[in-house]
Length: 278
Image (cartoon, rainbow, N blue to C red; front, side, top):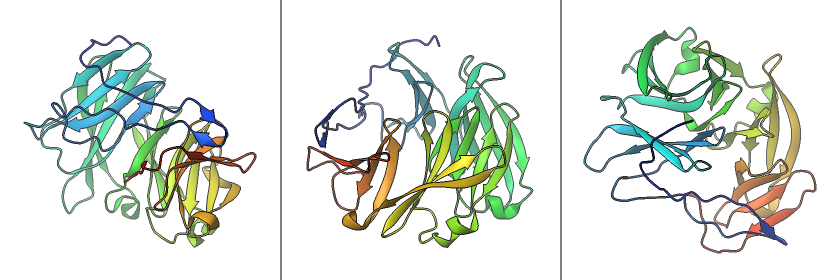
């Protein structure tokens, strides 16, 4: 990926552990001269994608950064996307291009527009979507960050996972099993999609006393329970992300972040006492 070098943001990742403790965390980059907020970062194949707002403008722009090549690129967003209900970033393996998508809805309707940005030529195109299953689309369905695997972008809803195929540029839906629905204590806040081992999409369903890990079976769009994590000592755990194949970052309620090893059931704690995720 060849991109002009525009900015030099500071990106920090976890790279080591010391005994039972994680290395100290620092925040992902902020540059108050250019940005108002950094709500989230998307990533695919080592490329980081961050939508942001300029201080003097209301248009969302998209910042792309390759930490390995130390190259970055800013692409102007579309005007008038205040009705955006979802966004995602991924790789179209059929066309060998990276795509960023922004989904907007016409107020009080089920008419959706998908704005597709192709990173290689910095061009936008739009496609209109009429939802076949209105129950699938009601409300803002981009709860939390999207995840990407094998040219498909995933978002979580209360009763299903919504997908967008970057090759075919079509939506689909993966319903939750009855068992997952039985643990639907808090419709959105307790569900988290994560990519595991770069080969599987995982759904975490958290409750007061436990966190369930479900693996998506792609062949038939079903869910297989993989394990249950005891959350009793922490009074709720919020899964964040895998930072290795076995180590899962999780956030206890009102406590520093921890790393949970899903193979050994051991826990590592952050050295600092001031790290929190809002």
